[in-house]
Amino acid sequence: MHAIAYRFAAVFAFVFVLSAPVGAKECRPQVIEGWVRMPPGGMAKKVPPMMAGFGRIVNRCATPATIVSAGSPSFGSVELHETRIVDGISRMRPVPRLRLAPDGAAVLKPGGMHLMLMRPGATLKPGSRIVVEFVLAGGGTLLGEFELRRPEL
Ligand SMILES: [Cu+2]
Image (cartoon, rainbow, N blue to C red):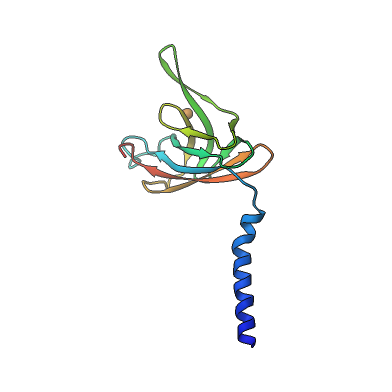
């Protein structure tokens, strides 16, 4: 009798643990296919002052979300930038707010919008997984994972 009761209790607790965080958590956008471009020449000699991050930020929620800042334990600072051609010259400018419509997505790609990752830590190497935390308007956060890759990949 006791053994069966314990087993039911264990199964119930397990299901509760699995389902509780999902039910309690608000819907948040997700980062998919995140990667960071390692500068040409690698980092054998010297850590470069900055790197660019790419991927997609997908909002599968029923409500819009706005990213207002970003940070990473692997970098001194992180900003969202966009690249634009002005008078034939490629220029970058910060994107202070990135709004994601319901079922919308932002594409970060070379030559377009990107994450500017400044002052990298010395331990980064190809294959490193970089965690970036995005802060949403209203105070929520979301975590994205970015893989450090060589430029030719
Ligand atoms: Cu930039």
